[in-house]
Image 1 (tube, rainbow, N blue to C red):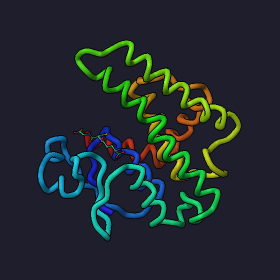
Image 2 (spheres, rainbow, N blue to C red):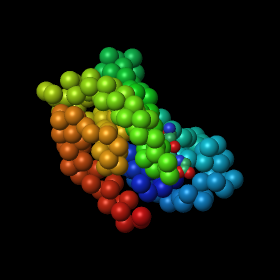
Image 3 (spheres, rainbow, N blue to C red):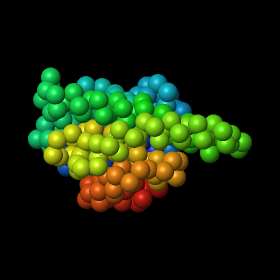
Image 4 (spheres, rainbow, N blue to C red):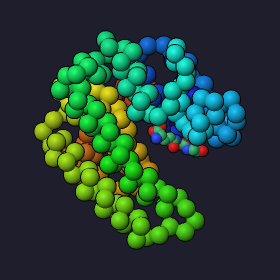
Length: 201
Ligand SMILES: N[C@@H](CCC(=O)N[C@@H](CS)C(=O)NCC(=O)O)C(=O)O
């Protein structure tokens, strides 16, 4: 896979997935300006990061990329068998992370990173995040990973979302979710992904 990587964007979660898997990959750095160019728009029609070139062609959307990597490298054990309940739960938490958690965090970010932040809109989006992250807090009280006994693609997707919320100071994390993020961030693969990113920022 060739990952088109813009540092400090959602492509870091794909870098993390690649480092967890340990298979070779090709990293092509892209800038904000390059994302608007026609060659990149042919890969991602909205000109966003991440995007990748697979053997079969281009692919975008970070969760789709993480899932594809998990499926291309079954020996990494990041995804359950097709049709299994384990995989169903991994889908559940991946989609939950992208829709129920990332969406309110992005609403907060849009406000805080704008010239005229609307404090009420920030509070409402933070309240939505707090309500939506509560089931994850309940789940993580007595377990290490979202599904089963090992890291899965669901942790990569949802974990990246909540880690982003914390690092960007968008919303407070409840205790068990914060401890979960601490564990994910301590993983050597995550540390390597961050080091690669830091070297290229
Ligand atoms: N849902 C997409 C969102 C991709 C996205 O919005 N990426 C941001 C960076 S994190 C981006 O490239 N925004 C446009 C820009 O910065 O010009 C995904 O998860 O891949």
